[in-house]
Amino acid sequence: MPTKTDRKLRSQEWYSGQAYENYARRAWLRAEGFPGDVFQNKPVIGICNSWSELNNCNAHLRIVAEAVKRGVWAAGGVPLEFPTISLGEMFMKPTTMLYRNLMAMDVEESIRANPIDGVVLLCGCDKTTPAQLMGAASADIPAIVVPGGPMLSGQWKDRKLGSGTDGRKLFDLFRTGRLTEEEWSEIEGGLSRSAGHCTVMGTASTMTSIAEALGMTLTGCANIPAADSRRLAIAELSGRRIVDLVWEDLRPSHIMTRQALENAVTVDMAIGGSTNAVVHLIAIAGRLGIPLDLPDFDTISRRTPWIANVKPSGEFLMEDFYYAGGLPAVMKEILHLLHADAMTVTGKTMRENLERAECHRREVIRTAAEPLHREGGTVVLYGNLAPDGAVLKQTAASARLLQHRGRAYVFENYAQMRAEIDREDLPIDKDTVLVMKNCGPKGAPGFPEWGHIPMPKALLDRNVDDVVRISDARMSGTSFGTVVLHVAPEAAVGGPLNAVRTGDEIELDVAARRLELHVPATEIAQRLSAFRPAPPQYTRGYGRLFLEHVTQANLGCDFDFLSK
Ligand code: FES
Image (tube, rainbow, N blue to C red; front, side, top):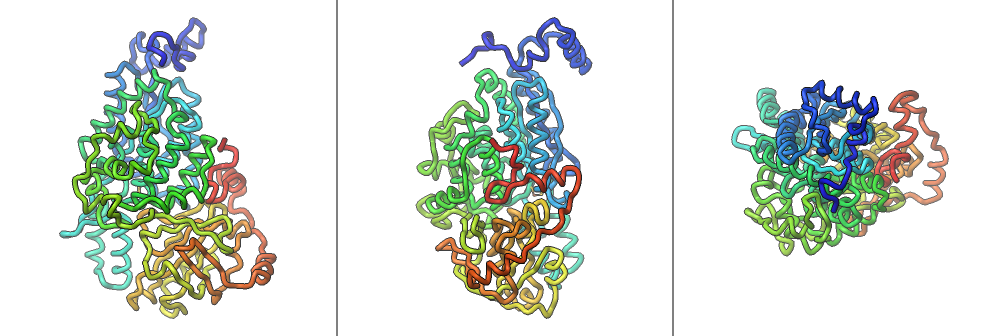
């Protein structure tokens, strides 16, 4: 390992030397009030901050950054905070997923272009974590992730509320007249009570947990609530640690190996993580040049028990999960399924990190011997309707629908679905399979979270709370139901969803991992031969770049020129 005296740091390429550029760079940084010795081969640590007031989940990250800075100074480094774009899940139209790759490029190029030796990545809301991991993987200088942590649990009267999960359930009561306007307004005020990301095992909690499972955070960092003082303490410790990581030259490519990615998939299954994790992990692997594909997820799902009893699949919220021991307790419980010798940013192996991990509440984190389900949360489906795969979160689905045959009711696009979903006379019943087309990466475009097609009012009025829903869209990690997502190839590029017509029979068989359209192959081929792509929805700017280069869901939806 290089010592502090025998290695010239990357930042010194900017600062050390007697050329005019070296003088000028020192002079310009001294404009911020630093003394001259700040340039004496001290690790310069970039703090890559996705803070934004247009992203409530990350709105506290300036405070977290100050804690990181304390740690960097204490360890002999020089912290310099810089912004990137932020992706506020609730606000950006048409969808944050359109911009994940843009943020990843911003992160990568900001790191690459600037005089920094290591980077601390501050993230939280859904896409900010994978975007930072993708960018850091490509830039490949020492990096450590500090998520902002989950919000306080939502609260209405004496009832705890979990972000979108309870929000959607209560909204269905409001839609059907079972909650008053006044009650709905009270719920709106109690659902999100602090900064921090959503309070269930949605995409944000899943991806920050995955950052920890990959070995990219300090142990126990992912799940500390945003409002908990321990969030700032671990940020300070992360600031100290990144300075040593620079001296050790321990880089993301040393941490995020194939073994670490398998650990991340295993943890995703054990926590009942968001289906979005599949797309993001494949994209991260692509940045590292490591093969990871949909069958890997299904193989790992089949051998990994679901043990984290957190909504939307389970009962509890992220605060409860943290107090029960959080991710370290889960990982210790499934250590036999992990590559325990995988190296992490702590400088120790995962096994060493987890030595002191404990579960404090078995209702929340089950044992591997007595899991909530013997398999993982997400399954991968194939069939003539999804030749390149589709995903379903079986732990958030209805048991009665996991083996199901039903007649399709087809929405050609999202706009048609919105226009029709509350029709009292919609000709559907509890066995209908709702199909929605043209909501994939190129079709929507941007791969929005429209896959959780709202339950039709006509069925809610008959107390039917779930039907099989199929689309080429994604779904919010906070959502639930028997929802088949990420159908690939998508309709917009001529995928077989185009062949489905209202009245066709569709079979979902989760145990056999099958999704079949029961229409003769010749008829399907004839229907698909009529496919003509729609004109592009973007003809200039970033949208055009996206449409021309985004890959399909099974390949991670990164740009084709960004993976290794
Ligand atoms: Fe940001 Fe849910 S809206 S994590």
